[in-house]
Amino acid sequence: MDEEGLASLKKWFLGYCRSFYTSREEDNRNIRLKEEHTEQVCAFMDILTLDLGLDPGERRLAGVVALLHDVGRFEQYRCYGTFRDSESENHGTLGVRVLTGEGVLDGLAPEERRMILGGVALHNVFRIPDAIDGPARRLLHLVRDADKLDIWRVFLEFYGLPPEEQASAVGLGFPDLPVCTPGVVETVMRGELVNLATLKTLSDFKLLQLSWVFDLNFAVSRRLVVERNYVEQMAATLPPGEDAARVVAFVREYLARSG
Ligand SMILES: [Fe+2]
Image (cartoon, rainbow, N blue to C red; front, side):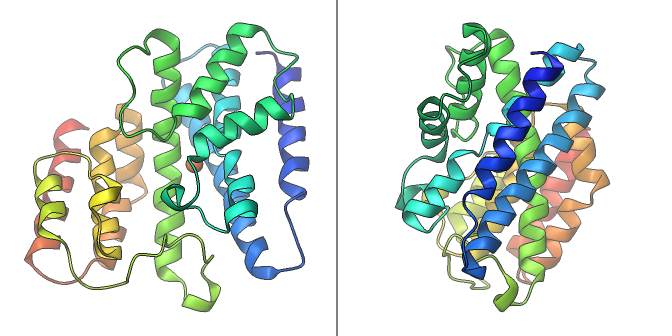
């Protein structure tokens, strides 16, 4: 990936985002949120790839995957009015369809195109298929870490806003109850990722987000979680009680141990 290729994709993406703004402030808030998220994921990607010492071409390719990973979100919101994949469709697959349909990657070498589409398609899967290895797998590891690092920011900001200022499609529709489901707590306490399908409340969703630390692939990513104070900020939004406190202590300890 050369400098020119990256610049032209950035330009395309900007124009593409712009085409989704409407006269409805609620819609615009949701679109803006994804546009800003993309910018921040790109910024995190830069930090990760610099820290890992990738060469400039690899860094630009990773930058393109960061730029395009959520390209399906815009069409998803326009068609279905939600960011919830289970109520609409998988936004990774949708992203691939958008990129292919718009011919965005047509000028690239087939191998680069394959890597980028693979990155977009699989950035959000629960588990990366074993068959994916080598540079394609590393690209996925990178985009999944960069994505999570910014989703924490998005949600922490969301939890801190009064309801009338929250982007409506972010909360994913879980009831905001001060209750943690026992099965969800136990999953995190085993050091495992929580599956979205097992959640009942917004508190469960916060536990799921804490469980993402187990899925981070690079020490630099775990360091960023600590630096940005994400666990402590998330802890402050959890309901009082032993369950939440146990989970937070466990996650904190995990980060200290694996740093
Ligand atoms: Fe994302």
